[in-house]
Length: 353
Image (cartoon, rainbow, N blue to C red):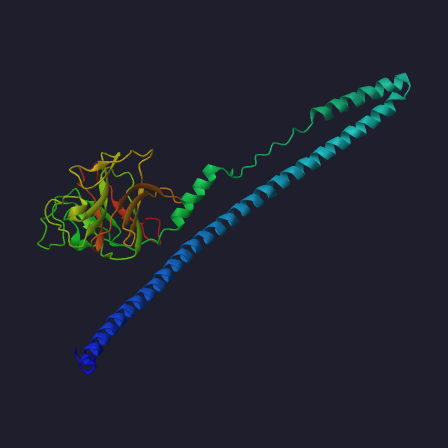
């Protein structure tokens, strides 16, 4: 049996190794505690921010509806008081005529006949001038399920991130595209375009352009005025996706797009041989809103034609593999049939290029 003194160094080494393992475990747990605290802090901050926006929106809406109710009450009150005054005046005339009739009734026959004719003529005139009953058209929102839905739609738009400031990058534009000086308007020229250069950033086949701004994290929202343009495609393109030659517009090739063709068919460019045709909306969208969240893995497209509400058209639910550029396929002018421009809506404008 080994002497205890000879075992002591080995035992000390085992003890040190055990301490190191536990110290490492303690460090991992402490780091996890820090991460939990940070996650909870961020969650509470996000909840507070979103609920704060909702409270502000609802408070503003309540104030607006209250002011509308006060306006209606004021106008109705003025009309009713005017009608009440007119009715009281008319009632006083009727009572006076009633007294006159009573006085005439006591007169001798000859005097009665003379005064009765005068009184009857005046009475007929008064009765003919009888004011019609007031008809008040009080128009206030009906607090119904539809009202609640409309409020939700408006609040949903109010919760969107602030409008992104975007401008087109001319160095990426197909040679047929003409950009405005502000960088917010682009259209396909009907003039013969020069051949594309050698810059790999430039589209040489797709009649497309991207923005100067590269998006890599956080939330983003921008809007594009498409008007009555019959053919277009919008979305994002991966920063590393190729731009030369014919583009294969599917997510695996770094393109996430929604488009319109033939002036009526909305289609999502999903991972398939052909784009997925979506339901035809009751009205063709004249403005498209695009929302991108890197954290949630969402790229959604909205009909933003209504200034107060958004209507979802389609959404991609997948985490993007890296940074992306907002992408705009203006499409060929089609001998003038598709010559309408695309307009980037600025945060400080209603769509002016």
